[in-house]
Length: 429
View 1 (cartoon, one colour):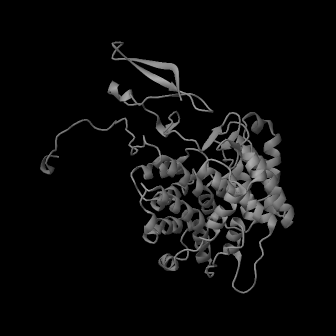
View 2: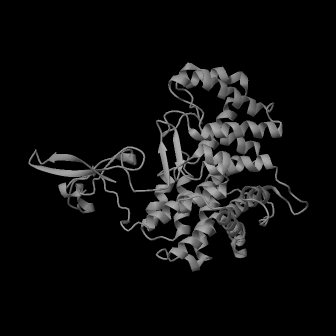
View 3: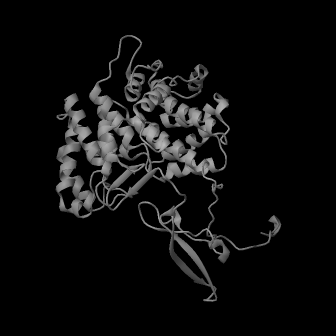
């Protein structure tokens, strides 16, 4: 934490100084503690919070220059290779990997609370059939507080624990209900004997007419997508959940706020944008013209590069392998759209223009292709993202509420509007 170093600020034309301590985390750059900066009578100005640490956290670490992503200190590559989503949920929520007994008990608890209140299904009748699934997600998740009123005391650790379990277990059920309602299909009840990801595919694609057996390759692919998107430090939606939670809002409302933020195309819509880009390219015959258009800045290349990662997105190589496994399993390597995607990947990895600018394929490029191969419609892509990120949101929410220094979020501003002026009666304007 605090080091022996300080940053000295001189202000008031050199008359006054303020010493601010330098804090050191266990990983990553040092941070200047500006909490006493208000003594100067000024505010700092940092649009987009690009140079501001909004909180102290022990959950996720990112080094964009080195291409590192750790959950509680564990590299994402190791978790994606050896773990599963529910084990990662336990890790993110509790700080340590579970023992065999803890893992079994945690999985049992989650998988035996996947049912939602039966009256919740009547909510969907109020939505139009063509409603976007994310619109339904925001409304239905926010309404959970009306059904589970026994876990709303956020000052009670036991209430917070129950709320976290309920969110992880019920979000997949609600997500699948959004999809089924949009296509006019009956809701499918969850199956406790399936894994978390297999159960989701069951609720999405099964019918009451015949048994549904999830393909293990596709189940593993979905599970990896969930692992890779489970958390990503203080992104926009996580910061939204924290800000909402700082006001004392209930956990269901906070997660609904996170879903609403994730819905923004600049945040959760990247893999959807990849599929739209492939549709616009149309065929392999148009790739050369498209690539030149990207270089001329006439077209945008979606699914390449990343705001945080300046080199390869560490999640991308994992998702690339998974993508090829899925295409191989389903025999889709000859499908025109997927052939187009693979050709685009090949060019981006070899063309000096992209290599020099480090515009490597990111996780969204491959996850969009995988989700499309799983027959998940584009409108559901961000819903899957929300499903995966729920555990990250509630882990940060709980961490924030457990912090004795937690205060309601209240950013300040640089006001550039009109100075004080007097009201003029309408007859004199």
